[in-house]
Length: 78
Image (tube, rainbow, N blue to C red; front, top):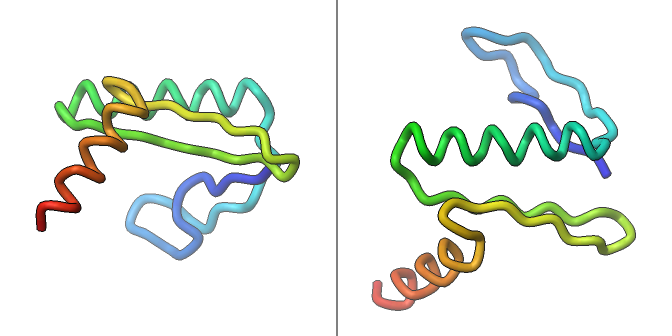
């Protein structure tokens, strides 16, 4: 499984990022950052990652199911 860390194009604060294989520690760190960002910004977030062998990893605040259901509900009312 691969994951981009940062943008692939040049930005103000970072150079180009390279693709890296995601290990369990990096995956845990990504999920922790998603939760931190949600709490700091008072936002609902969901992150879903699938591996090449179809293993599913999900993280969300307050929960991935709550965020996705809320998105689908508000999306249908537009």
